[in-house]
Length: 137
Image (cartoon, rainbow, N blue to C red):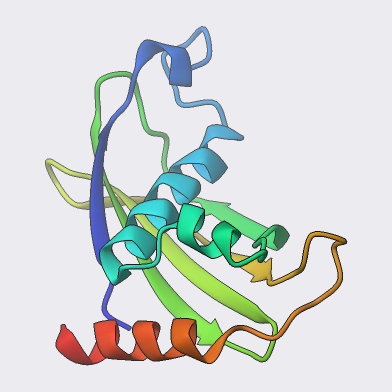
């Protein structure tokens, strides 16, 4: 799937005392990108939860290339990488906007579960929506 782009300006609160983005905040940037990707596809998380389905992270990886700093304008690219029976993998790349310098890349895997935390097959309507979004790009 072609990546969806989200821009984000680094705030002071994202940074350590050296004005470098704290390492764990890259996962928050992934979440921002993923949330906006799902919204753009027409399936915001609130709608998924109304179906009694939850989508927790079951695996995450972030490879750090360069540091983002206070006030950098970042580009977060998010794309559906793989859809399985009861999970979805989202891939990410984070760039410094001005020069398109790659700062970090990684992925998150999300299980689809019910309210009791038991795996649940991804509804066909969600799979169809992802495919339609990908075809429209």
